[in-house]
Length: 252
Length: 258
Image (cartoon, rainbow over all chains, first blue to last red):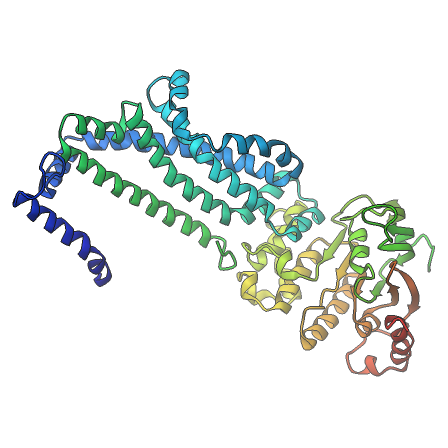
């Protein structure tokens, strides 16, 4: 508790100075809203449900894109990790695609899917798939060869080998890629909304900004930070429990 | 006994070479039989191809020349009839599974379902004196205990042939002696055929019915002796037995390269 208070001291101090400076007329009201006004806007947006609706739209697209990327990245990553030959064949194509900025695909996905959830999720998936894929390839390649020999000596079928040896041995590292991807998913979803897609928190901020309601924009920004923090905390807890299942021998 | 039809395993002029054909073979002209229920030890200096030999027998590696027969048929690839115990037990166990879970792996592979699986695990845990550690993870165990888990996992397969690659090489002297006696007792009970690789000449004589000495460059059989010391053996008397000392003197020179 004491540590939380210590950590909160600086933000609270800044907010107080900010509020005082604003009331004293030292800050331009049309760009830098007063903290109390921001709080009021946030409460208002929560009360009328608009920010929750927008949050759901953003989170929905981010999670859908993330899920697609996680599934595809792990699947392809395991295959490429197991087959160096295939990796050498596909690797250059991956390296050519990877540097394309995901957001630059927004116009293309707009043509393909139109406005809405699908185009946003597609861009998120493109952005998120790379960290998952690359980490999975490395994780599978890094599996102790002795374990694969044990599987070979026991003549485990490929599905059991995958389920009992390869995935559990790789999961500790794959999780790192998943965490990175989840962080990216929220960033990309909001970016797509700001750039083009008329839905979610990103679009909400654009509207607030253009209709000269900076306090609402700040409220959404604050809310977005809180959302990112919450998602990461949730994932860390979920995966922490997952690690626990592998016992103390598993150092992620 | 040799060249007889009772041989579980039979090698005929087996050779292994890595890389180009001009390279010196790792193993060359290896021929021997292993009889049913026999405990065969292979001893040799490091780099003589001992591990290559055991990998051949496990089916993890194919010979470049010659023929290996297992149960009268050409040995092709791995089989659950042949279990291999690796020296590096810490790498061969699944760190995310408990002791019981690790033993269960080979029963799962063989398609042994519950409740039979649970019963067999219980028996093996008791036999390997691991019952108290059943729910522990490998990383929580000493090296000797971890190697017991690997042995238990291999015994769970109920193999016809047990292949051991310097299984006690990384253990301290006391643990090693205890495990030597335990493995000798276990395979005698189960009448399992064993090929046991070691770099320790005394261990080879102490455990083996026969001892093969390998020499390096290329790896080849330098000498093959029948130990002929009665069982059960024990750490004190057997090691002071006249025949034990004779074998030791005779083979010692070979390992030093004379």
